[in-house]
Amino acid sequence: MKHLSFLRAGSGARFPATSIPKPPEKNKGIYAGGKKGYNRPRRPVAAYIGKRKMSMEERIKTTGGVFREGMRDGIPIGLGYFAVAFALGIQAQKAGLGPVQSFFASLLCNASAGEKAGLDVIVAGAPLWMMALTTLVVNARYLLMSTALSQRMDPKGRLLHRFGVSMYITDELFAISIAREGYLDPFYLYGAALVASPCWALGTAVGCVAGDLMPPWAVSALSVALYGMFLAAIIPSAKKDRVVAVLVALAFAVSFAASRLPGISRLEPSWRIILLSVTLCAAAALLFPRTGEDGQGGDEP
Amino acid sequence: MNLLYILVMTLSLYAIRALPMTLIRKPIKSRFLRSFLYYVPYVTLAVMTVPAILDDPRSPVAGALALAVGVVAAWLGAGLMPVAMLCCVTVLVAEGLLL
Image 1 (tube, rainbow over the protein chains, first blue to last red):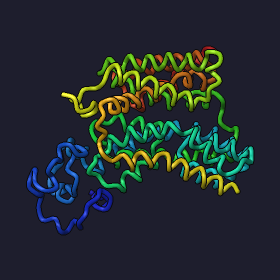
Image 2 (cartoon, each protein chain N blue to C red):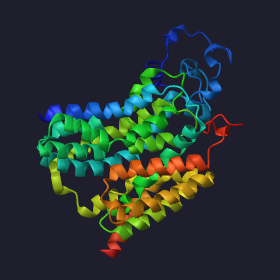
Image 3 (cartoon, chains in turn purple, blue):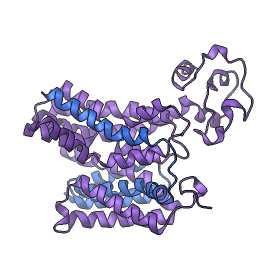
Image 4 (spheres, each protein chain N blue to C red):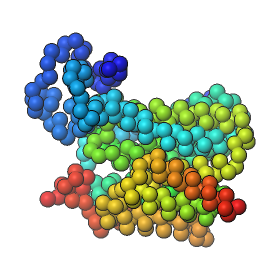
């Protein structure tokens, strides 16, 4: 039960644990509407949960359990990150960044294509406004992801968590977050980020120092780890929902075509991602608007 | 100067991520927008997977195999880590045989 002190400090408990004499009544006060929350009671249930045996289900629903789940799912992401960051580190070294600088740049930015574009700006010695503009353009897909994720945050949750979650909206962490059911428990994301983000930063620093030590076959094999995770995030929903399945297959095909056909293939990948996402999703939303039964589809019957 | 660049990059990146997240705090009412946002993650991730999964490994054929293996494994219910590992192993083995 060592982790319980952490729970009280971290899970938004608004009064000290010592002042909790007994569990509050169900469906009263803080428990009202708890069903739609993070799928667990939102306040310091951990303070008294330690006094009895927890079922497996209850254990998973505690903040600590969710946090550990996040850390577990963060491991494959961290491994994939490390490999990609290694390659980025080599670029960073060429751009004249030291290992410490590249470590902190990666720890703060948490973006692959974005950082690569940023390094290009540094190499070019372009003005600072150019850095801001490039970052905005290359990472504009995060606007879409952040908007999508904003709808998955508990509207009654604390604003602080929205600032915290924003820090870690990366392609991969977004993928595993959106794959969760119900409102996103920010501690799931924090757990994953705690594992993945240092791997990302460390990979950049190591790449910056150790350059070409990693054999090309290993770099090649590890390069698909991140895409494997994308697949694991989208395919289960495609299995459940035929519209999503067709949409994903269509997205694969159109994206491949757009990257190979003359003319349109000259489009920057980041622009292709935004353009195709907006077009395909708008078409799908017009043709197959969602009904409200899963809380995702709107206010229709 | 490098530090200034990094600072600007960090701030612009955070702004992109934090603005929608903190400004859009209420559930969106429009049925079109909600449907649109429901589809966004799947399409965005799909578009990021293809063609990158073909272009990133040394052999595009190995990448295509990894895509097929990943889709099948995820369809059969494999989790994040197993699917990711399977894709890596597929590329490793396929490149060993092909290259």
